[in-house]
Amino acid sequence: MSKVLKLKCVKCGREYDPSEILYTCFDCGIAGILDVVLDYEAIRKEMTPEYFRQNSNYSLWRYLPAIPIDDPRGIQPLQVGWTPLYETAKFARETGLKQLLIKDDSRNPTASLKDRASAVGVAKALELERKVVCAASTGNAASSLSGFAASAGIETYIFVPETAPEAKVTQLLIYGSHVFLVEGTYDQAVELCFAAAAEFGWYNRSCAINPYLVEGKKTVSYEICEQLGWRAPDVAVVAVGDGCTIAGVWKGFKECYQLGLIDRLPRIIGVQAALSNPVTRAFASQSDEFEYRKPETIADSISVGIPRNGIKALNAVRESGGMMVDVTDAEILAAMKLLAERTGIFGEPAGVTSFAGILKLNQLGIFSGGERVASIVSGSGLKDIKSAAQAAGRPAVVAPDIDAVKRIVRG
Ligand SMILES: Cc1ncc(COP(=O)(O)O)c(C=O)c1O
Ligand SMILES: N[C@@H](CCOP(=O)(O)O)C(=O)O
Image (tube, rainbow, N blue to C red; front, side):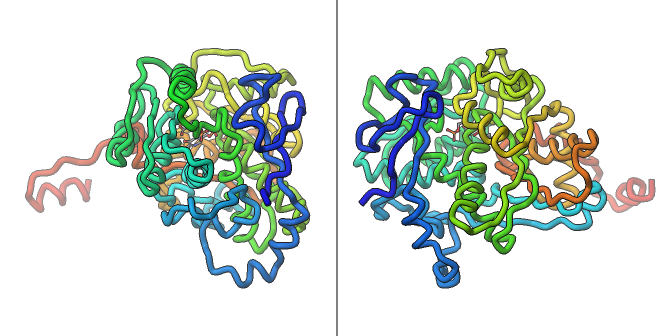
């Protein structure tokens, strides 16, 4: 029996039998992203404390009873999830927080949180007997799809903006994907990918349309809670582009609560880049509409004009009593450097945007000082060396001569 009770449109609430529909709501069209509603009574019976005590699978599949994959044969052996959660006590004190937790999701097989979604997306594609999968991406979602598809032996077509960082594009190619560098923005890549998927009948992995991807991303919150001894942090801070990640984070916490695994919920704070901030603007004006402005930010992964999961993102922030905040590119680069040199964790610009948000919120006096704040580093700094170099500065050039070194070291 399927674990999915129904699919529900986040815009109009219309409910669907999961066998009836693949992507978005028939009434609301592309804006009608669907939410997967699971049989929580059945999950609660399965995911008991005993279940966790006996479970030696330390990956996202530890939470399989709560992941809507019915046929486990599509699960790939790549190790995804159960990434480290660092408690940075000394660093937290410097920033005036009770506790700063860093969940390092750059430690996934293709080096971003997107692996959680792609692991589920590829298993779903195989369950549905789809042989070709496509994705629109700024780079991470696609490189992760490419890695999991390579493992599964299925074909992939990828649409990324031509400005995507070289390392991400190289990942796509090395995994053997068919890659289209789109002469345009990520938003245009999304449109093109959707048109191609409709034309060729490919399975679309994009969170922008596929309801099952959130189900992978939500496992980051299950892990945070379990790693804290089944407790939630007080606040979870998440970078927002399309909004699928923050939606997944909130869903994970809500499910842990609903399943009786934790006894209270965190506030969710979303962080956007100042010139790529449609969700912050919608939140500030208490609207569900997203006004398009051409996005401009060094954080390529969250450079989004039309947030495809915007309503889910707003719901996460509103339902949890959280808020949205913006950070500038300069603040993102400063946060990248600070995090790396103080903790050894090296995130790409979007990957450290949540941490930049924490620094900003702290400056604004939003925290009382007593909170346990969790930040998710969602992508590795090695994915975008060009931006990292802007934060890192230049090394000293020296002749192969000890006197030259002495002069530099002794000033
Ligand atoms: C590294 C990184 N951080 C954050 C995000 C934001 O996620 P979302 O677009 O689901 O809001 C993305 C991708 O979108 C990403 O690749
Ligand atoms: N910035 C994202 C956009 C798409 O990711 P998705 O998981 O929300 O589909 C990326 O990494 O490509």
